[in-house]
Length: 317
Image (cartoon, rainbow, N blue to C red):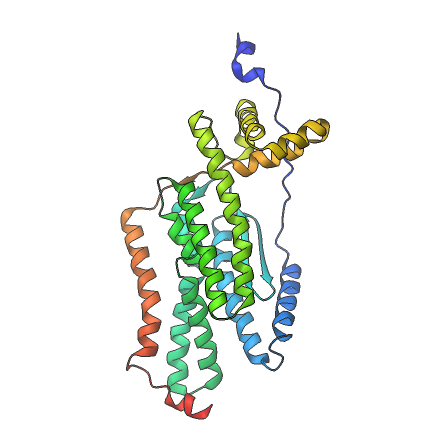
């Protein structure tokens, strides 16, 4: 009989209320203002620099935003973080590897190309302000292509990983956190050191998920899906693993059983891995890596080589 199927033995999973985020350009502009004021408090006489920084970051993030909008990402928004940078947030129920590659490079690739165009223009017209703007375009976007989490280069690097992905993400996040904190210490930047410390919390999150998913794999419990696609049976199987492995969560549930549904649902959702289609061909990946390396090296060759002469700029400052 249909009612005797094992999947019907489990109670219905709780409804997970997902906060819908709409594009709010007023909030974006407010975050830009707070971002600018935070830098102004440190560099009070560098109004030009702060303006250029906002322009470069906005154009960079707008590249991500437009591609995410084109690929129909949900809950899109752009925000600036004081003394840090900016980011674009969005989500999909199922990701495409090819689309993800394009979304990531839509920030730094155009930024570097624009920076090269501006620096050549500034060189021939000998425009000081344009040269400084082009330097900032090149510096921020080239640094952003370095394979360090959470930079765009790090996001690109992670997308190439197929096997043992959770373990790789854990190790990669740990190394990136140490690099950020170490560089911050060497250049005496408390902002970078603080950022490296904040990333250590992300490392802890990866470590927990890696541990949980190893157990789920051993029990052959499906977790590569969106919460809405999770069956009641799979939900309760994951819930059982979480309560067995997380003593603090188990204690809270035992003390407040009637109020624990939302808490359990959020923990189950955090363990899930949203699947993505590996639809990027080998040729696509080779071309992408070639562009990545070229755009990393080209600005260095342009600035260090004999192609452009910036003596007029350094003589004037």
